[in-house]
Amino acid sequence: MLLFREKVPADWLPKVLTNLPAVLVDHAHLERKAATSALNLEKYRDLYSRVEELNSIAIEELQHFQLVLDLLKRRGIPFGQPYPSPWIAGLMKSVRHGVRQQAIDHLICCSLIEGRSCEKFQFLAHELKTIDPELAAFYAGLVESEGNHYATYLLMARAINEAETDQRLDFYLDLDAKLIREPNPLPILH
Ligand SMILES: [Fe+2]
Ligand SMILES: [Fe+2]
Image 1 (spheres, rainbow, N blue to C red):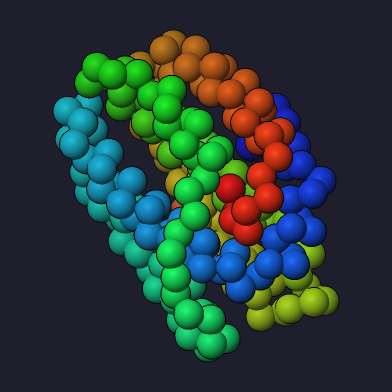
Image 2 (tube, rainbow, N blue to C red):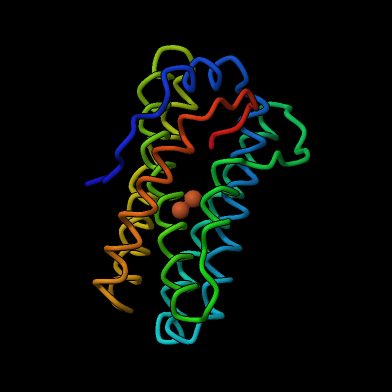
């Protein structure tokens, strides 16, 4: 179902597994930002009719945020400052201005972020099974929801304009493939 043109780099998994506490803090921020993004999409005229669906996503992301905070608390990991993600910043930098274009691009960026989260959570669910079963189950429990968000955002963009969405998706999939190959030593998911 995921359309990505480039695999997650081989050094991503070892980096994450050796920095789990910092990655969990980053994950908490990622869920917080996902809730914010769902609410931010409600500013576009083309999405006024989808406001309740977007609210549902925001609520779900806020619940994910709370789940990660609970996990941090159980593990004695203090909630801390977020790191910026060069991959997310690189995607967002290419969002065009203009209400309709901006809505389509913003939706595609959100979709790709959800899709990469879905993919990476699947890796973590698999890899952590023997090392940290609680965390493995936690990530497995998030996969379906992030996958649904990926699909929902893409469908929302297509409902605005299908041809333009496919054209911009083509651009963004190439951009994702380029950005994901760039070395990133930070202990972050994206
Ligand atoms: Fe989430
Ligand atoms: Fe999500």
